[in-house]
Length: 426
Ligand SMILES: Cc1ncc(COP(=O)(O)O)c(C=O)c1O
Image (cartoon, rainbow, N blue to C red; front, side, top):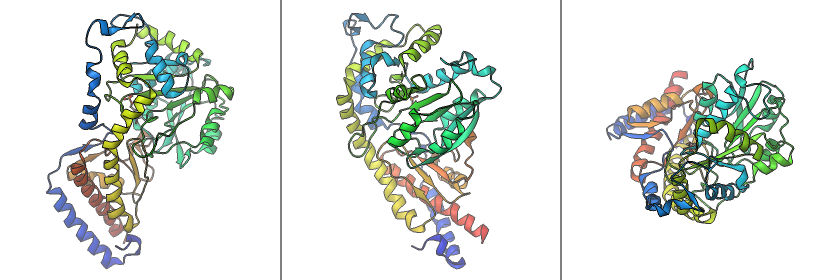
């Protein structure tokens, strides 16, 4: 195959006609597939459904003398706090166990910052003239949406292979209106990047002008390798404390992609002072979370070692899907030289940059052919990809046979959109 950039007009025209025919052919497959979000597949959910029978009788509900069916333990069952502390390598006193999903806790933290202020706020953020929030991008659309919904101005920060560009971050935090940053330190969504030790050290040592600057450390994929061995990660709570920033960071994690998506347990890790502060605020809203579910999870997941075993089960289901994506892209797209993508070893996404100015069109074509992907631009603040080139591929949900068809459609649409652009520019 000749790269598009080396084709003459005739060759481009031929390639375009072939792509058009291919598009008609794949459209006729009549596929209806939603690949817009990183959902676990049925096989993954079935694999962990033993969790449903962990707590069956009234006696099962008692743990360390606590009746999990009753009110109490706002910050979580002691065994659940110990469980998360082991996963995140911090202390149980630094853990607050939330309800079924970590986005809830993230939303609550930002919401309280606006209505009440954080531990070191001079005033609630809603009383500030301007609030800016840093958004490394491509990043997670739902993060950006939370801060956008409260009226913060979202500021793009470029990603590098080592994580967010720290030169840019260190410069931007000199502005006191900059109140925080969203981060996904391990297998970032969607790039699949693990932040380097140096990036993490620089984060812990940030010197923001805002006294209530918050580092939103969303460790959503902390144990989510689908290829290779588990990669340990540093305890950001301790690193921030050692750097003299004990209350600057709040870390989040959940079992959404370990047990049931949106039906697991989640946690927030932070300094003890922060945990006390947030417990006071959250305690107005809620007496406690569902401790029966916490107990069910701890009994099923047991500890870090056992959880990592379960994650190997997920990996066995996920790895062939990521391999399928890579195989199609390497075979169909790589020789044409107009797109680049990452090859992650964990997380839930492949991030692809196609020919600038064609991502929206490629995804519209995909939709026409029956495959819905995450909207173009979703990984950028305000849904606006300045180059209209980034596409997030989420291969976890469909079985491999369906994914193969979806990838055939996707590759065809990428080519067609690129060729349309080249023809228009010719
Ligand atoms: C980075 C990141 N954080 C959080 C979530 C959602 O987590 P939860 O279900 O715990 O709210 C996702 C889901 O895709 C994610 O990619």
